[in-house]
Image (cartoon, rainbow, N blue to C red):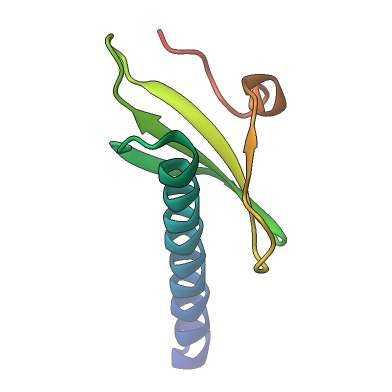
Length: 95
């Protein structure tokens, strides 16, 4: 692999990493704004060209923690919360 190709792959990887981090931060901010509670973590379930689907985990009175899902547009459009039925094909139930 030549240097130009390797640099291209690294740039692609960095761009994807930045997009995921940004989507997670926006989903966490929306979660805090709407739920008024602190999340314990988040994960990108799917990253597409125009939006990311992010799972946010939060503690309640039981284990495992509960989850909420958000569609985070790549543009500055509003983040919206999704129901489990909306993401059931890409998410698994807690075991």
